[in-house]
Image (cartoon, rainbow, N blue to C red; front, side, top):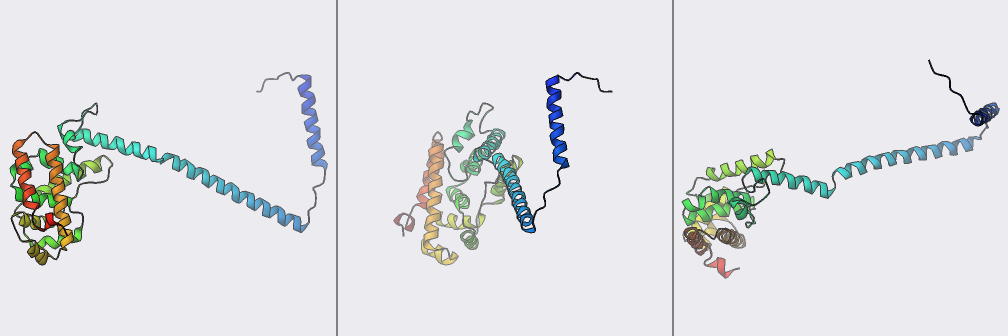
Length: 258
């Protein structure tokens, strides 16, 4: 049951005044509008309703955009990458670079894949011709060019590289990132043949790869070799091997240019 409260005389007068005003309004007969006025009135209300709907949609769109500001998207992606690098032992819990991370930040082509191969001993365990073939598969970005190399067999089992690629991609997916590692194994045999001394024009004729595309592939492979050598300076034996790899690629039409 509601408790009775005393109303101040001034408030009571105000309430009575409002009640009387409402009574007067109710007592008045509704104003009759012409058909034209009614049409205009309905049209105006439709416009108001349309504007209200547009405003409501705009408000919702703005709320969605605020959730996806570039700064927020960048921060989310940054945090995911940091967590990935911690799990891969590239950085420690304080975000300091570990040996893998120090090497990786100096590589600019498929950096995770190249780093994993180096620290798995691939460059130490294989000969220059195989290394050149694998690096060509890493730097090649044109599937059509890669497929032209099928006629040249490769002496190395590419499944070893594909398994590393798969592991990196799994880790990236697990952290909510797009996959970054890729590998085109069909081109490896062509680069291995070039590294072993095959004639430039014979390769072009046998594969159908244009002279410009093959020169470009060789130069990209050389560039990656230089990046690896520059990032891993402490190992003299590896440095000598990488220099040998370069000498086997940078010859003939590749250094003359087209």
